[in-house]
Amino acid sequence: MPPTHIREFHPSALGLTVLSSISIVIVFFHWCTQKMSQENLNRGSDNIIELAEFYDANPMPSVAEERAASAPENELSSVPTAKGGYYLLYHGYSFTRNDTSHNPANTHYWRCTAFTSSCKCRTRLTTLGDFRLGVDHLTVKKRGKPVPHSCSPSAKKKQMLFEMCKTIMDSPRESKIMDAYWKVAKEAREEDLLQLPRQETTYQWLRRFKKLHFGIPGAPKHRTGFEIPDEYRFVTFGDSAEAESQNALLWDSGIDDGHRIICYYNPWVLDHVYDNPRRAHLAMDGTYKVCPRNWVQQYTVRTYLQDGEGVLATPERWNMRERALAGFPRTNNSQEGFHHKWNTLFAAAVPPIIWTWIDVVLENMREVRTDLVLRNRGDRRRRRAYDQMKDVQLKALCNRGVDEATLPEWLQRARKITRKLTKNGAYPEHSRRRRTQEANT
Image (cartoon, rainbow, N blue to C red; front, side):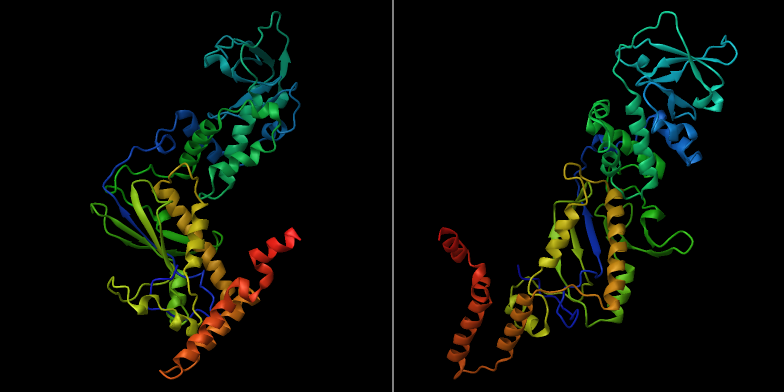
């Protein structure tokens, strides 16, 4: 589709669309308050809160954790609990400590973790040794009349869930929950995968853990009444020692504004546009597919917007002659391609909350900054010979003088060139009819 004619600037000698241009994202709140989905409810359980605190205080895996990854199922191993202890894993099942005040010295009692579930598994385990020294110092004591398990094996489930949590902690805040899930799940055996809860249940559990670990605010229930924290106002590039941070929140109309407007922009690219005002090309396109919950259409402007025009579709708005002479792209395909990629950055079935949306915006700004640095060095995307030939012939046609006497000749030449510029004319081997005829013969 032809791009909207707003004041444009030339991006480069090759007429390339500036993909690494400024990203100004404007979103508007609408009046309809929807019910938040389950994964966005700020009601993390005490178990997840304690688990996040435990991992924050113990960032390095213990010897028991490292051993659990490779220990055979018929040996003792462990994974950490939410309260700073550990689950005991034995014969494919998980046990939690259930000591009493009358325990003999260096003797500990354990019960199956499914004791509190619907099956009420009553299998017990007795170990000898000091559990505080780790699972390596424990041995299982034989029981006279062991009670068989009434539940399904759960040891691998515990191991995989905690591996997913550690993966989340080692990943940036904007990373996807499903990435941590699949990193662990794709390496698991079939019988181990069947121990996990339903996929969506596991996602919800991991979302609550991530939310508490990174301190992500709860999803706003309305367009007003919440402030944007500093970590969602600034975009940072580089390591913590020499990090470069700039304000990316261009405009916020206020937490009490019923028609609240929030605008983000890429500060690095804006500086580049100011330094090269005649080398910027404007491409504009809107998308309704991926917007934060309780917000309406998002518009992304890849450069800055200057001046304005009425809605009258005059020839100046749709005529491509000046664009062909200047070497500008004649469509907004690059912007539509950006939105196609943008839509893949979110789970299609789950509308993102505002904080998830901002994380993706800031991450995109960092990618654009990197692309801009490389383009300033001289890196350019290689264009096809067909596209370069098309630009040359169109530019020659537009440069050809025409008056009333030479108009018939000019129109004849224009028809000849435009027919040649089609793929079937320029490259007959691309013709569908020719390919069909060759296939039939």
